[in-house]
Length: 232
Image 1 (cartoon, rainbow, N blue to C red):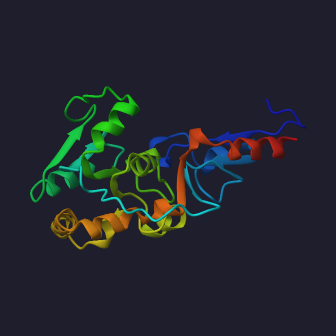
Image 2: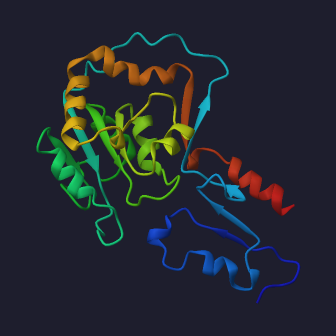
């Protein structure tokens, strides 16, 4: 039952590939929904997983060598084991491990020594130079907390997900490595090896921290405020 003067909002942060009931068919039935609220920018109300904000005043130039205490190479946290719905992330990681070591943790890999406690994870990950931020679905603008958490943890994300333009639109400049920039997994691994051997090149991926800050969606309420504005 849909009261004549009541507005309905369809809200979802999961990709269409994981939501069988989510689609145009649902939204079109009896025009039951007036607004859509998703992570996509073309939603009536956009509710992204994270956001990049430019600082009003740039911080002093970072002179520290971020690579100095990072004595491990690549880490990957994975929790979604449902390969029927997801892109072949394990296949990609298995190929990558042919050329460089990758430490994998989570429900689909080795037991998480931090048991998902973020402060512990941040400290544990800080010893790695790269963290894999591999999305479980290739959908437009579907960039989840995997990416934003990696930026906040101070590692360099290697991303697999939507097209690079989607990342460039929302991410700090020169803050990630996109696998689509490489014609093979081996060439991606070779580039990681290069960055591992060249601290200046590696540190260049963190210059954005002088002028930008990133937030996860739990840390800001602009989207909820926008919803309230629409409702009233």
